[in-house]
Length: 206
Figure 1 (tube, one colour):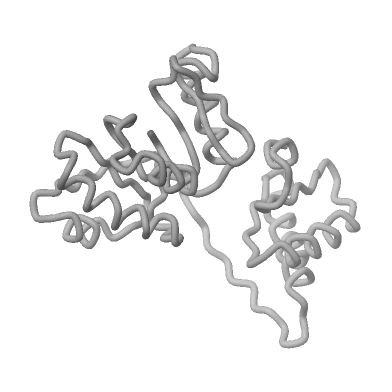
Figure 2 (figure 1 turned 180 degrees about the vertical axis):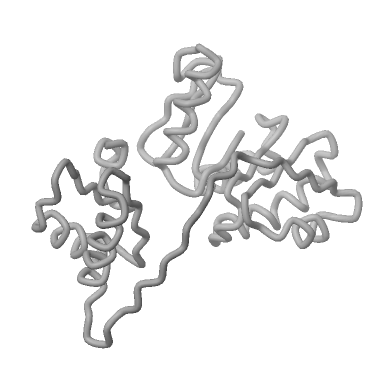
Protein backbone atom coordinates (compact mmCIF):
# COMPACT_ATOMS: atom_id res chain seq x y z
CA UNK A 1 0.00 0.00 0.00
CA UNK A 2 1.24 3.45 -0.88
CA UNK A 3 -0.44 6.64 0.35
CA UNK A 4 -0.54 9.99 -1.37
CA UNK A 5 -1.85 13.21 0.18
CA UNK A 6 -4.20 13.98 -2.74
CA UNK A 7 -6.55 12.04 -4.99
CA UNK A 8 -4.97 13.23 -8.22
CA UNK A 9 -1.53 12.06 -7.06
CA UNK A 10 -2.83 8.60 -6.06
CA UNK A 11 -4.52 8.16 -9.44
CA UNK A 12 -1.69 9.49 -11.60
CA UNK A 13 1.05 7.57 -9.78
CA UNK A 14 -0.97 4.34 -9.99
CA UNK A 15 -1.40 4.85 -13.74
CA UNK A 16 2.31 5.56 -14.16
CA UNK A 17 3.35 2.43 -12.23
CA UNK A 18 0.87 0.28 -14.18
CA UNK A 19 2.32 1.68 -17.43
CA UNK A 20 5.89 1.03 -16.26
CA UNK A 21 5.01 -2.57 -15.39
CA UNK A 22 2.98 -2.97 -18.61
CA UNK A 23 -0.07 -4.23 -16.70
CA UNK A 24 -3.69 -3.03 -16.90
CA UNK A 25 -4.78 -0.63 -14.18
CA UNK A 26 -7.06 -2.36 -11.69
CA UNK A 27 -5.21 -5.66 -11.84
CA UNK A 28 -1.76 -6.01 -10.29
CA UNK A 29 -1.73 -2.24 -9.70
CA UNK A 30 -4.80 -0.31 -8.57
CA UNK A 31 -5.88 2.76 -6.68
CA UNK A 32 -8.61 3.72 -4.23
CA UNK A 33 -9.70 7.28 -3.60
CA UNK A 34 -12.97 8.75 -2.38
CA UNK A 35 -15.81 7.61 -4.70
CA UNK A 36 -13.46 5.57 -6.94
CA UNK A 37 -11.91 2.14 -6.34
CA UNK A 38 -10.11 0.28 -9.14
CA UNK A 39 -8.58 -2.42 -6.92
CA UNK A 40 -9.49 -6.11 -7.26
CA UNK A 41 -8.56 -9.46 -5.74
CA UNK A 42 -5.57 -9.45 -8.11
CA UNK A 43 -4.20 -6.13 -6.82
CA UNK A 44 -0.79 -6.38 -5.18
CA UNK A 45 0.22 -2.71 -5.30
CA UNK A 46 -2.44 -0.29 -4.09
CA UNK A 47 -2.21 3.50 -4.20
CA UNK A 48 -4.60 5.50 -2.03
CA UNK A 49 -5.04 8.75 -0.19
CA UNK A 50 -3.89 8.79 3.43
CA UNK A 51 -7.55 9.26 4.42
CA UNK A 52 -8.47 5.92 2.82
CA UNK A 53 -5.78 4.07 4.79
CA UNK A 54 -6.83 5.79 8.00
CA UNK A 55 -10.45 4.76 7.37
CA UNK A 56 -9.34 1.14 6.83
CA UNK A 57 -8.00 1.00 10.39
CA UNK A 58 -11.63 1.10 11.59
CA UNK A 59 -12.45 -2.31 10.08
CA UNK A 60 -8.97 -3.87 10.09
CA UNK A 61 -7.10 -2.58 13.12
CA UNK A 62 -3.91 -4.48 12.31
CA UNK A 63 -4.06 -3.69 8.58
CA UNK A 64 -3.58 -7.39 7.89
CA UNK A 65 -4.11 -7.06 4.14
CA UNK A 66 -0.82 -5.14 3.85
CA UNK A 67 2.69 -6.61 4.04
CA UNK A 68 4.32 -3.25 3.46
CA UNK A 69 3.22 0.39 3.54
CA UNK A 70 4.75 3.49 2.01
CA UNK A 71 3.69 6.89 3.34
CA UNK A 72 4.77 9.19 0.53
CA UNK A 73 5.03 12.98 0.75
CA UNK A 74 5.12 12.70 4.53
CA UNK A 75 6.34 16.30 4.89
CA UNK A 76 2.78 17.45 4.12
CA UNK A 77 2.05 16.64 7.79
CA UNK A 78 -1.74 16.66 7.47
CA UNK A 79 -3.81 15.44 10.40
CA UNK A 80 -4.27 12.14 8.54
CA UNK A 81 -0.50 11.72 8.17
CA UNK A 82 0.12 12.55 11.83
CA UNK A 83 -2.57 10.12 13.00
CA UNK A 84 -1.14 7.40 10.74
CA UNK A 85 2.41 7.96 12.00
CA UNK A 86 1.29 7.48 15.60
CA UNK A 87 -0.94 4.52 14.72
CA UNK A 88 1.70 2.74 12.65
CA UNK A 89 4.36 3.20 15.31
CA UNK A 90 2.14 1.25 17.74
CA UNK A 91 1.15 -1.27 15.06
CA UNK A 92 4.79 -2.13 14.29
CA UNK A 93 5.13 -3.36 17.88
CA UNK A 94 2.42 -5.94 17.12
CA UNK A 95 3.20 -6.67 13.48
CA UNK A 96 6.96 -6.85 13.64
CA UNK A 97 7.16 -8.39 10.16
CA UNK A 98 5.47 -5.42 8.47
CA UNK A 99 7.66 -3.06 6.47
CA UNK A 100 7.06 0.69 6.66
CA UNK A 101 8.71 3.26 4.40
CA UNK A 102 8.24 6.98 5.00
CA UNK A 103 9.36 9.03 2.04
CA UNK A 104 9.62 12.68 1.13
CA UNK A 105 11.91 15.00 -0.76
CA UNK A 106 12.09 17.53 2.06
CA UNK A 107 11.31 16.04 5.48
CA UNK A 108 13.68 15.97 8.43
CA UNK A 109 14.58 12.29 8.16
CA UNK A 110 16.48 12.29 11.44
CA UNK A 111 13.43 13.43 13.42
CA UNK A 112 11.24 10.75 11.83
CA UNK A 113 13.84 8.04 12.46
CA UNK A 114 14.13 9.14 16.09
CA UNK A 115 10.34 8.94 16.46
CA UNK A 116 10.29 5.33 15.25
CA UNK A 117 13.33 4.19 17.21
CA UNK A 118 17.09 4.03 17.07
CA UNK A 119 17.21 1.04 14.72
CA UNK A 120 15.35 2.92 11.98
CA UNK A 121 17.57 3.24 8.89
CA UNK A 122 17.69 6.46 6.91
CA UNK A 123 18.22 6.03 3.17
CA UNK A 124 18.99 8.95 0.90
CA UNK A 125 18.24 8.51 -2.79
CA UNK A 126 19.39 11.31 -5.04
CA UNK A 127 16.90 12.30 -7.69
CA UNK A 128 17.35 14.14 -10.94
CA UNK A 129 18.62 17.65 -10.42
CA UNK A 130 17.67 20.64 -12.54
CA UNK A 131 19.18 24.12 -12.59
CA UNK A 132 16.98 26.67 -10.82
CA UNK A 133 17.07 30.44 -11.21
CA UNK A 134 15.41 32.52 -8.49
CA UNK A 135 13.71 35.86 -9.06
CA UNK A 136 11.94 38.07 -6.54
CA UNK A 137 8.99 40.21 -7.59
CA UNK A 138 7.90 42.44 -4.71
CA UNK A 139 4.19 43.02 -4.21
CA UNK A 140 2.44 46.34 -3.87
CA UNK A 141 0.57 47.12 -0.65
CA UNK A 142 -2.81 47.55 -2.35
CA UNK A 143 -2.33 44.76 -4.92
CA UNK A 144 -4.65 41.74 -4.90
CA UNK A 145 -3.02 38.31 -5.09
CA UNK A 146 -4.50 37.66 -8.55
CA UNK A 147 -2.97 40.87 -9.90
CA UNK A 148 0.40 39.98 -8.41
CA UNK A 149 0.20 36.54 -10.03
CA UNK A 150 -0.61 38.08 -13.41
CA UNK A 151 2.32 40.47 -13.05
CA UNK A 152 4.54 37.49 -12.26
CA UNK A 153 3.35 35.61 -15.36
CA UNK A 154 4.03 38.68 -17.51
CA UNK A 155 7.50 38.90 -16.01
CA UNK A 156 8.22 35.22 -16.69
CA UNK A 157 6.80 35.45 -20.22
CA UNK A 158 9.36 38.15 -21.01
CA UNK A 159 12.12 35.76 -19.87
CA UNK A 160 10.78 32.62 -21.59
CA UNK A 161 7.62 32.73 -23.68
CA UNK A 162 7.59 28.96 -24.27
CA UNK A 163 7.76 27.56 -20.74
CA UNK A 164 4.98 26.26 -18.51
CA UNK A 165 4.09 28.06 -15.28
CA UNK A 166 2.98 26.38 -12.05
CA UNK A 167 1.41 28.71 -9.49
CA UNK A 168 0.72 27.78 -5.85
CA UNK A 169 -2.01 29.76 -4.09
CA UNK A 170 -3.47 29.54 -0.56
CA UNK A 171 -7.04 28.54 -1.40
CA UNK A 172 -9.82 27.89 -3.89
CA UNK A 173 -11.04 31.50 -3.99
CA UNK A 174 -7.58 32.82 -4.84
CA UNK A 175 -7.17 30.10 -7.50
CA UNK A 176 -10.50 31.02 -9.14
CA UNK A 177 -9.70 34.76 -9.09
CA UNK A 178 -6.23 34.25 -10.59
CA UNK A 179 -7.62 31.86 -13.22
CA UNK A 180 -10.25 34.38 -14.30
CA UNK A 181 -7.70 37.19 -14.53
CA UNK A 182 -5.15 35.10 -16.47
CA UNK A 183 -7.78 33.80 -18.90
CA UNK A 184 -8.84 37.38 -19.57
CA UNK A 185 -5.33 38.25 -20.71
CA UNK A 186 -5.53 35.86 -23.69
CA UNK A 187 -1.90 34.77 -23.62
CA UNK A 188 -0.87 33.16 -26.93
CA UNK A 189 -0.80 29.34 -27.04
CA UNK A 190 -1.76 29.22 -23.37
CA UNK A 191 -4.36 27.21 -21.50
CA UNK A 192 -5.07 28.11 -17.87
CA UNK A 193 -5.95 25.06 -15.77
CA UNK A 194 -7.07 25.53 -12.15
CA UNK A 195 -6.54 22.65 -9.72
CA UNK A 196 -8.04 22.28 -6.25
CA UNK A 197 -9.53 19.49 -4.13
CA UNK A 198 -13.23 20.13 -4.85
CA UNK A 199 -12.82 19.76 -8.62
CA UNK A 200 -14.15 16.52 -10.10
CA UNK A 201 -11.59 13.84 -10.97
CA UNK A 202 -11.91 14.35 -14.73
CA UNK A 203 -11.19 18.07 -14.32
CA UNK A 204 -8.28 17.31 -11.99
CA UNK A 205 -6.84 14.83 -14.52
CA UNK A 206 -7.12 17.46 -17.25
